[in-house]
Image (cartoon, rainbow, N blue to C red; front, side):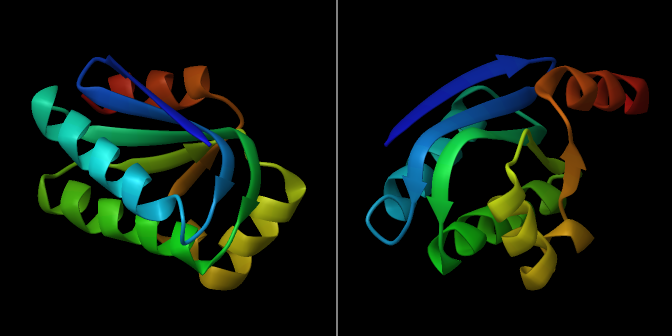
Length: 115
């Protein structure tokens, strides 16, 4: 599993490659939170194009970041998720709090329009 963080216009982009499970969730949380604060970000986009598996720990990672970002007036989004992950998002209700975009560019474009 690898985590790469970049930033654009106060939006932290977190690209995860591999599995999001109980073994990797703490590392994802810690790195995301650290980079969010360090870069003075407002929003987070999770690029999940490289995720091959996600269990309930992944749901917890995203929900926890949503709570933090929402309290800061920001938005959390997920981009480029596969069919299996989409089903997990739907069943868990994550799509009620996390917006989905086909790719990072579309998410960034909408975020820039919102200011």
